[in-house]
Length: 334
Image (cartoon, rainbow, N blue to C red; front, top):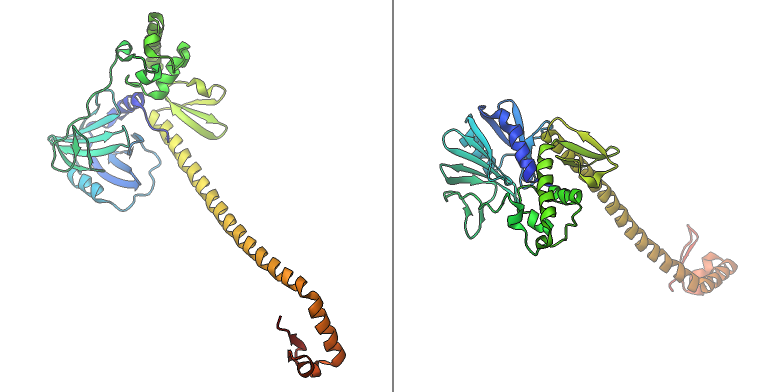
């Protein structure tokens, strides 16, 4: 599953700024790990560990779980005073009046946490690490900032692509930068020349200035979204969108529709396989019957000929077999 990356969360954070100053009026569950909140007149989709942005296609609200009920009760009609990205990472914080922080953590498998004055109130899921605990009543600690801005600081004997993942960019954008600079991603970072390092740094600066939301398509199929024109989609249709929210929504809707289509085909295939197995059993049974008839064909023929000769009324006494004279049937035990 394609998930949003650091640069994309930064871009989305800027898009969301227009709802600052508005009030939260509802919070819904719309899927497994997928929620929607209404702030002012805008709907925001929050898919745990995957994406965040404005929503146009709302989806049906499901039965509220405990997490939804707690968030709705506490944040109802609260004013949104700030939206911020933490340390250029995949963490977006919605600050509401009253000291409430609604925190979307997009790294790993993701989480959504509601915090009041530094303490956890409720969360999508409870988690525990050596240095932080997500549990009601416990102090909330922001994840440690492991990102750096300076490329030279992170280069080591590891692949350069691995080192670049410590920059606040994202894997797809790091890979694209290396492609544009003509640097193989498995090159050990410490083997890069000063000129190559400088070129990568300049390309990062150039890339950040060209950020625009795009969809990449093959015919009517949506392949991906992004904020730059990725080289891997050369020759594909590139569509510039009005917002990253719009681009991501079209992409994820396409993934869902595709997934539903695949599931439908899988169900049909499963039924066909099941029917095929039934036919194999039937074929085996019919073969056994056919083989049995063939093996006893001569014996049966002899009995039928004799019965015709002596007449069916004499068959039982003469041949010691059972008959149905009305239906003119002979029952032979073999």
